[in-house]
Amino acid sequence: MHIGKGHLILRDGRRLPLNFQFATNFDEVRSGYLLLNTSGINPASYGDRMDLVCEDGTEVRFVVTHFSDRYLAVSGRTPALAA
Image (cartoon, rainbow, N blue to C red; front, side, top):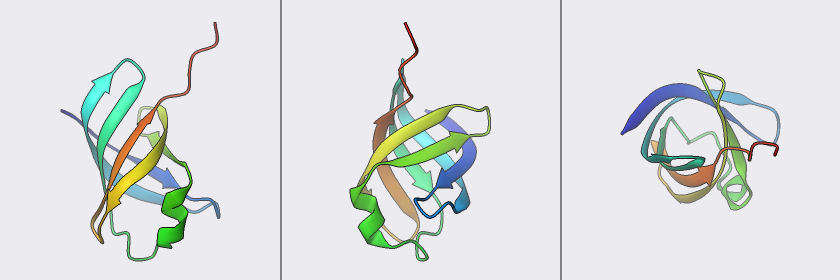
């Protein structure tokens, strides 16, 4: 399990601090949980891709597969490296 901290970047530009737990951390693929208070986020925004910036600078673009007031279950990948 890969655990860390980062920021969720919403479409309106807000950056929300969070903790994350990724069960899958294989190459560029990530899946797991973003742990944060989601009560202030419009659930309609979960239908579009979202971005996470980890404290080590890694960026992850993901989709939400499930949510509650305390977490987002996500699946996504880091941007592909230029060849």
